[in-house]
Image 1: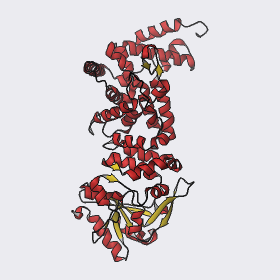
Image 2: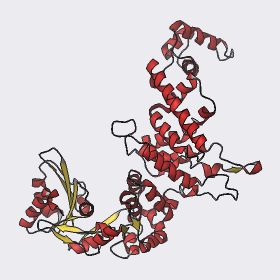
Image 3: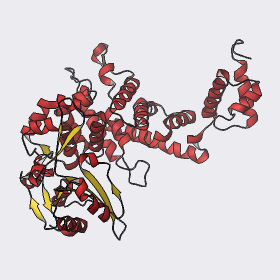
Image 4: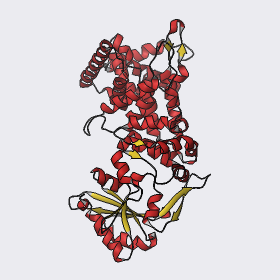
Length: 476
């Protein structure tokens, strides 16, 4: 193994050793080193307290220093290499993290040995260390062997580990997604038995783990583990609810299985960094995950054995907004994902009968900045096994997108506004600001979408025509 990948680690180790302190590279960087992966974020633990090693780190971190984690025994530093790349380093005193049975926040107690610190880590593959500067590899719990077997196992009894920090259960399913590993049977059993313990962890910390899972290379694997463990029943119950009981004639798809396929397809439709939806895209992936969560509440068995899910888009949008708010997602994520769920069926009518230009303009206008994501969600959702229907759908979507490109060459659809603004409407009709002006503006926007841009005189004529059709009690 080439430990020279991190000369900064060696140098920092020498500085600590000169002061009589132990320092070891720990956790993810060591795991990634064994996996042949590179990291610019280095985590260390030390025998020194923050007060003892702060002067070393402040001097060493000439390009940056932070102490936001001081109450947890952690200080950080930044070094910028000659090639411009940055290396972030965080150093933490040997410690023990555990929860009070009723607390949402971990209590911190300092430890006195590297091996003791490693025993308190989440999984054996993260409980390995490399002492610096002498590069002594420390692996008291067989993490290298588990890494080779691609298995997630806790260093100590899993029930003790998850009792100390219940968030480790969410990290387990996240690592399934990130690393492609599987959870050891005894660890999985403990997770199932202790899922209720996740309730004491803050929504923000749970959200962060779920986000990392979704942004990984294998979100489907993590989501399946999330559901199988029982964690999803507590954290995101709308997802396991998709496992609808299939009727005896199998007249509708397994909605959960369909959703997993849609997630995979949505990931595959993301673009490179210069494309319209650069990977990984949290908004698109979340929308793929929740696009059908309205189905359980709207399922209806119709005469003749058919199954319907009328209005599951609107119902799903409301459920999405409620759940994402509960998980403390940023408001723009809540708004965008909810709107994608609300719009995800909009295109389907085009397959049977191509839209007019005005309908295409409305689709683009309603989608707004979500247009590219909406099209990808719509394509991902078309999972029919009927090859003829699949070809028809792809052709229709390709055709619609080409029409949008052509229309955008003629006008900026995204910025469509009524041909008359509010001031012009008030001047023409002699109105004061109020509800009637809003009604007039809405009508003129619809007219603009139906007819494209028109001359000012034509717009004025249409405004007066509309106004004269109103009931007399609404006219000034």
